[in-house]
Amino acid sequence: MIARLRQSLRRIFTIVRKELLVLCFGKTSRLMLIMPPLVQIVVFGWAATMEVRNVDVAVLNHDGGSWSQKVLHGLRGSPTTFRDIRHTQSEKEIGGIVERGEVLVALVFPSDFSARIIRGIPPSCRRSLMAAGPTPPRSSPTTSRTSWMAWPRGPSGTRRATPSCRSWT
Image (cartoon, one colour):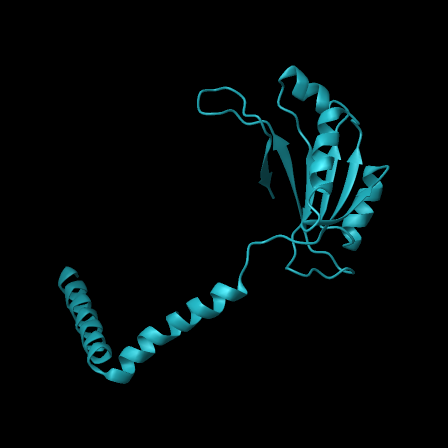
C-alpha cells in the first residue's frame, strides 16, 4: 500500500518537474506566466477602490442627547460620504426604507444613548446595512446585516474615546 503511494507521488513529482522545465525554458511560456499577473495588477489597481461615497442614511433618534447629536453632526459634516440623511419617526418606517433600497445604512439611537456614554457604560446603536454591490438596485434589496456600536476597551482596560462597530450576520 505504502509502496503504491510512493510510486504515485513519484510519478506526480516527475510530471510537475517536467512541466516546470517546459515553462521555464520556453520564452513564450515565461511571458504567459509573467504578463497576466502584471496586467491584472495594473488594471485592478485603478479599477478597485475602497472609497465610500454618496451613501444615503436613515436615522431614528430616540435619544436627542448631545452624543447622538455629535454622531449626526459628524455624518452631516462628511458631504462626499453621506449624500442624504433622512430622519424617521419609527422602526417600521426605517424597515420600509431599507427594504425598498432607498437607503444603504439605517441608524437607531436608543433613548439612553447619551446617558450611557456620560455614565461610562458602553452604549449601543443599532445599525442596519444593506449588503449590495457598488450600485445597488433601488427596487430589489438583498439581505441586510445588523451590528451594534460598542464602546471598546483599550490595551490597559480603560475605555477608548470613541465607539467602534462590531458586526455579525
